[in-house]
Image 1 (cartoon, rainbow, N blue to C red):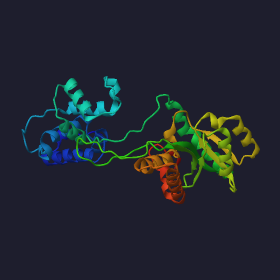
Image 2: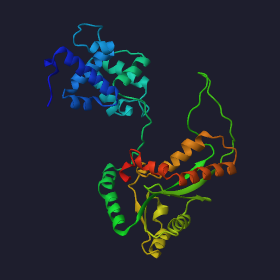
Image 3: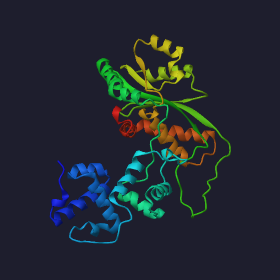
Image 4: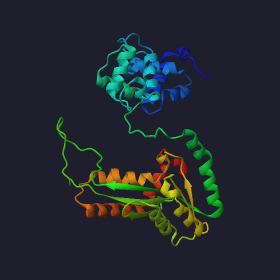
Length: 340
């Protein structure tokens, strides 16, 4: 039930305003804050506009006046909805990610208000927004297929696994290269830092599988991952295991090859393959093995040659194999939590 903030005494109204603004700054959305406090969304954005104009003192209901606001509550709400609900490409920008300069442009163009870049940065902070690395989606992805996987397909796989005592693994292949780099380093402004490395390009291919209990099984592959290579990996995966394995992979043609199907027919249910929805790598916890390896290790190192690269890769994968809690954490990312 919504309450009319205008009927509160001044001290209560002041406390309510400050709680609302503090909650937004504490990572709650304005809509969530409005529901929690029982007020309308327009009131929350109005209080955010007051705070932007004069800080915490501007929220004091016992005070009147103050400097005029550059942005009203309704304008703050429009900015919030635009940045959180629209892709910049929809507004004819050439890029898909919001930048402060782009937000500055839309405020000037659509609201007729000119703000400095630093002022836009403070505005984003006051609205409870922060710069974050986005999760990318293939435009070919079928949202209905993903929803069906989460709602029906995967729960059914779990039910079948429980019935026959099988362990569920997620598998994937990846290639790592010597010229892949990630991360940042400090340097004087205007002087791009240079890290010397070998100009030769080389790489290696890998296959791995992970379970939600933190088990990791991996193999280094010479050359391409063909159906024959994949079958050999499956043989190693089930070797010495008493319980059946349900392996979930993407729909790559290698995984669906005739040779693979024939091999599965020969092992009498010791291993079954299941397939993720098309173009949905974010649903696979095993992708985070490669993210860990590429972005946290190889991407930050000076690679001098194939042997050193191989040693580095194997050292990290063997370390992960021993650190079951680290591997299990891959099942607690926002997109993979469904499988935990």
